[in-house]
Length: 184
Image (cartoon, rainbow, N blue to C red; front, side):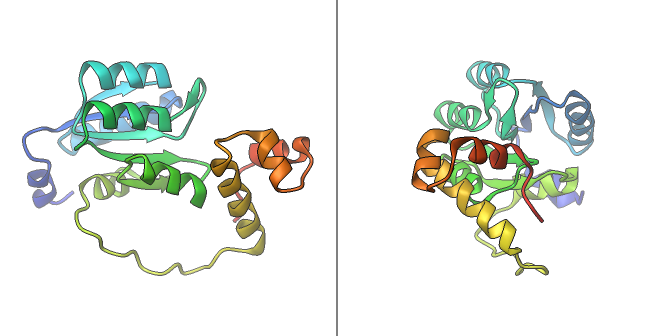
């Protein structure tokens, strides 16, 4: 990380990491401490919300899917306690719909796993509205279908039955699709 990025951290270098993958959480915490952050970790939505209430950080990295719920609940709690918090949502289930939902409720950026510490730091410290470069490989038809399903699912407030009805799809079929990782 460049020296100017350390300077960009400002006075408050607090960072909350919320992820239920303990090994990943420990590795990321060490990497972020080396980059100048004062790291606090949480392994669940409950722990993340408690940390947000007790010590609202200046920065946060929140996994979207946690064992006890949705990481967007932690994002909302962070926004209520500290509106200026820079939040990156991190997930292994990258979808346009969830990215839009995350940004709408206050996330600064959205990254798909595996994202390395430098990508996360760049997202946390990014300023302005620089547009990313166009994709090298556009989405496949399967991916576009999956993205559409994810968008309708988010619009239905993650209600499987309602989403299945609107997509004219059997509920169990939809559940199988939602349980899988996104196609490439």
